[in-house]
Length: 213
Image 1: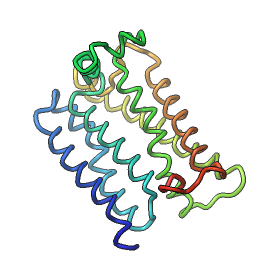
Image 2: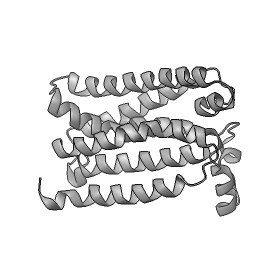
Image 3: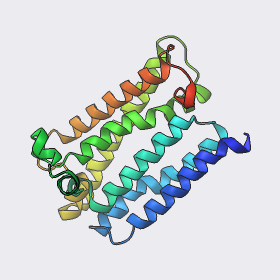
Image 4: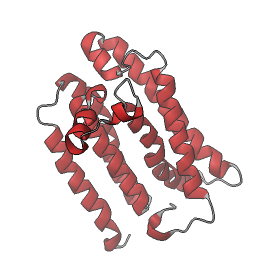
């Protein structure tokens, strides 16, 4: 791979490492922070190895960067307590939840949607190399891949919450009293993935800036 092609991934990885380290200091609930970062400890090394074997587009790298930065923020505060409402009030004088009529913290819902939207380009790049598709499967397989492991993650999340129980289990699960939380999270990830598959596969969209892997 040409040396120049590594500049953006290396820059993003360096910025993310600094961001992650800053948010690792004094998180709101340390035990929940550890649980949330299991994903990072597993995925980050795998993604570095993946990039050495599969050349990811700039868009895919940026998507990974944005998602993991938001995840670090959610891990620091816990997803259900990220104070975006207070930030919006401070910066604009208006709260997002107040304006849109939300009755719960929506940060987790946003990140589940962005999981589908931002991780799918990387999934497509991997599948195109490891499991080349044709016809409708070029559209369907990446979407099914994303939906399946987004759903599996919800099951793992539920199992961890049951295993740990108490305040830690509730903080990690973050349902905020919504019995349909897992289904809504999975649906948002599926919608985000569908949008990303369309953007990456639609033949009329240009490859400029690495939009299509």
